Length: 115
Length: 115
Image 1 (cartoon, each protein chain N blue to C red):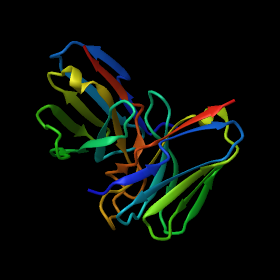
Image 2 (cartoon, helix red, strand yellow; image 1 turned 45 degrees about the vertical axis):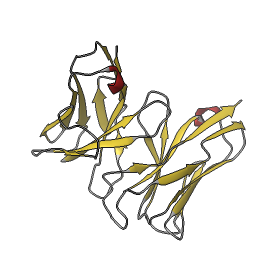
Image 3 (cartoon, rainbow over the protein chains, first blue to last red; image 1 turned 90 degrees about the horizontal axis):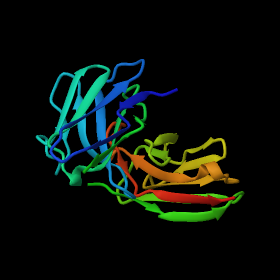
């Protein structure tokens, strides 16, 4: 069964809007979640590591003020794309592990389209 | 950082044919993961490899962890139309690391199966 639930699956909005994406772990506690971005016909690129109860760790080149991450509970991490612009249009995917030595399982992704 | 070179980039095959794809790295990996991604969805784990030389099967899929720890291959036997999708290799980015959290992905292999 599914390990990770991501919502919404698709968002279409106007430029300048802020968009929040949720990632939930199902039936287990996830102290760490990961956020990836995937442009069309490209591979997944890690954006940031979301840590429950502390600040997220961002990969080089990812603007932390642009992509706000909140991991306030052990089952929920949110990614907010602030003041989104067309170049932010992409497929955003979260992932987590059921245990520290387990491989990552991914959500179904969120297709973000900024007009 | 570490990069994974995945080949081929795409494959067009007839139903019933066998498929082989591989990943190489200039650095040692302690874990190799193979994922499949269907259009508009997140990657789904196919096979996880944890030891050099390990050969693991999952139905018609077989993957091996290279002895040098710098490569891995995935074979699909007797392909069927539902095998269509993008296949990614992935592994923890820190050489010699054991964390399965952060992942580096290969560029992906796009598989098309003609009935």
